[in-house]
Amino acid sequence: MLSRRTALSRWLLLTLLWLVQAAPALAGTLRVEVMDVGQGDAILLTSPAGKRVLIDASIKSARVVDELRARGVEQLDLVVATHPHADHIGGMQDVVEGLPIRVYTDNGLPHTTQTYMELMAAVEARGITYRPARAGQTFKLDDGILIEVLNPSGTPLSGTRSDLNSNSVVLRLTHGERCMLFTGDSEEPTEQALMQGGGIQPCDLLKVAHHGSDHSTTTAWLRAVQPTWALISCGVGNRYGHPGEETMARLEGQGVKVLRTDTMGDLVVESDGKVLKVEAAGKQAAPEAPAMVRSAPARPAATAALIPAAPRAAAGSAASPSGGGAAGTGLVAGDPSCPFVSSRNSDLYHPAGCHVIERIFAANRVCWESEAAAQAAGKTRSQACPATP
Image 1 (tube, rainbow, N blue to C red):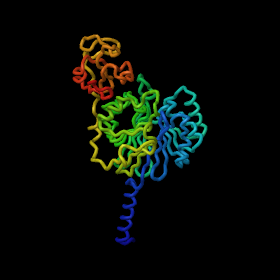
Image 2 (cartoon, rainbow, N blue to C red):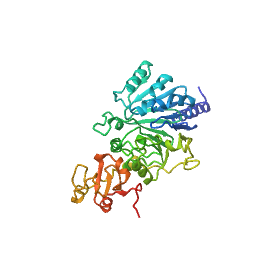
Image 3 (tube, rainbow, N blue to C red):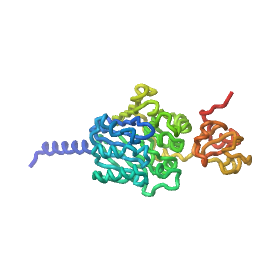
Image 4 (cartoon, rainbow, N blue to C red):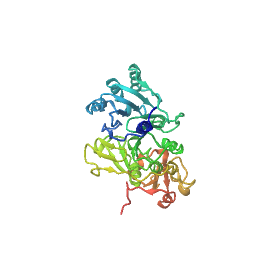
């Protein structure tokens, strides 16, 4: 028979062991590196215990595998290809053939390019565990780090501007009190689906989708995510004009601090589960030194973040490019006599002749007969082309 004291001591020890196993450790630093790979994406996550996760591998000429080796990467525990466009998987075959990989995942949508087919052949040839990403899946790292798949769902989005982009793998990384969102090249339909599905909660840091394209990062999305920081990966002087001026204006309008690889080089985020440290490690200093986000007030409940998209213009108040008129004027958004133009996907409007209008997808252009009409519909004048004196 055990004495009462011995039995109590064992009970206390077992209880302590259970608490240690049940609670996240939160004893180390998580490091996230958005690598400066030009017009593409390549993001490396390193857990406190040294586990490595790679999200995308940019274009082949970025030599991502060499960049990883230079950072001391000897193997990858998880590789995520958000979607099969060349600026995200162009260097992935070199990674697959050059480093041991435990698990490989992508959005499950095949592509017809030689780059994609040779990549998947390399994954199969090396016997790498392959799992198509689906909303609800989770990957647990050490130190209480959880990676959740938010997109794609079981039913892929279809009929969008780019189905491959819209079905990008979207990941939410949680480390203690801090949260980061990685969005691939997802576009407005993805954002709408995630907000309608209740899968979006506020997050401290947003990896901006599609290199800052104006087809993503809507005002409704930013209101739902409520990021303090936004990171953009894009190439210097890229031919797409990324990041788009409307996207930059929306980020500024929501008070989000933006860091970008084309002007700042590698972007580095460190988290201890309570504090985020965000800094540029390359071409120039970050806007603040050190750029830090201290432990923030409690976030609102998820349901409080589900803010609907901005209201669309009422019928008859604006003209589409195919015809019709702004309050019966017969103007179209491409007509030089159209005084003000906005995008259906933006809360901003621009005066005729503003260079931003050329970047608005033609089918999304809306003509307004006056600033008052645009403002009555909830639009705000863009600062990209301010009024002339």
